[in-house]
Length: 442
Length: 184
Image (tube, rainbow over all chains, first blue to last red; front, top):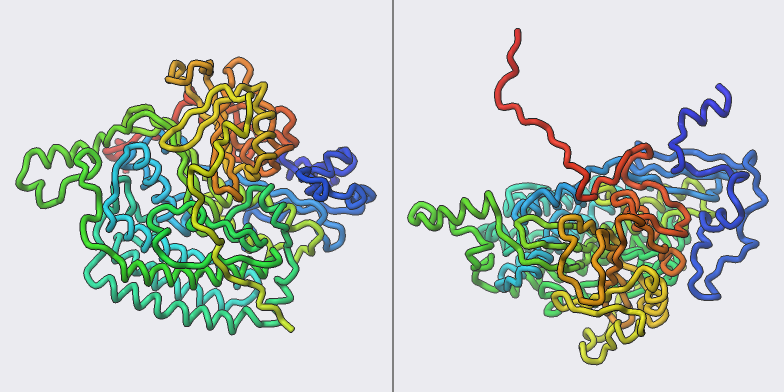
């Protein structure tokens, strides 16, 4: 087959990385990351743009969408000169299921069921951001116990998500024992979730108006068993990875990003914090009751893959601290708001009261109306700022539900992180961005 | 020899008092049509022509990150309540800007007519809007003038139409409750 024929078969039209001859130097500069024109000092030196390469010296290859290290169906087009990555372009959309469109067809009661499937590693955060948006529009006041249960569950979910990231990152860097360990720890948390919500994933536990059920009997013991085990296990990870020479060589100085660049690219979460910006929504713009608990915001110094690893590892410890405080400070009381329009009546009342039966039926079939308005709520998910822009028009369904997915935005930094590195490092860098494709494509 | 890399520390002060913070409308200057508050969040209405100027003024006064950009199709609510100065149009571009230093958010709403759905791109001010603008173009068909790579991002290349528009129908799969008739 000739080169042209091969190209015709693999081409995906305008999305593909174009030949160097077809690209003007200005366009090339944009593709290579000189897009940043913020301050004078940050303008990329034109001499740094490798215009001298011709198309016959470089090779464009595909990584993904079914490459095991791309964490799902991420496809990256890499332009290589030998083993060095010159340009790269992530191509996404393979998992697009139109969840924002679906969200407009579902009532506010059903909404969380849809949203929880976006970021499948931190489903409770997805439910939380939607519930907070709906409650802001409704003006419903949360009882303190509901708030603290939400905090407890989302922090446990953050531990589960970070531990899972440790596992897959270990696997990408050929530390397969880390993978087994990570999954072991995650399983502890997931079995507590199963006990509380009925499911290991996709819980639909946090709903507009509170949570679906109270914590099960003996939950303190289960949670304390988790937070007493996990910190010890993170010390094991320290011994296994943090000081290990091979791991350090693979990660130190790889995929560097400066704080200015991270802010300009709208990166949030561990990527931004690893570059040295202490920006954590739990601290900076507290939601739930995060202003009442004591925890540290973990900040990196260099902004490389190793820092992103260290930030996540230490965030597990901080989350354990928060969970401990949640156990100590968990107030008694209702686990959902006592607002008849929003909250279904208790199960036992249905057998006694006709009115309760009607309320129950109405809430689960038609849902409730939300007054017109628009609101943007944001929380700190394990991957960064998870936002929900909700437009209500007074009916029982959202008029527009937009999710600001942290992975989707963070993925933009990938061409900058990969540039100039080796193709073997690309695996470590992709992993350190921690994209969850369900959330990227929605 | 090795570095332990990560220093932990709290990010410092408690959240700033609301009174100390200058409102974004003051910072943006006279180019803002109207400024309102939605559930305690500051919203600025700007015209398409002044959109870049307002965003530039806000960026220079401390709103260094564009947290979010999305489009909304108000086809079923063309006469929605808006401040008097604002002419309602079918599409709206909603931009969420964030100031890390001042811990402040502001939302810009730009009206975009159905007949000419074009807005200038924010790419040169906030390079992080690249994916978000591609998404808005893909799902709503609003074009961003000057965007370096205006292609579809989530839908396939050859897709026709923009699926999040309100006149784009939702597909349905008929539910079959009975077994299909026929020989077994």
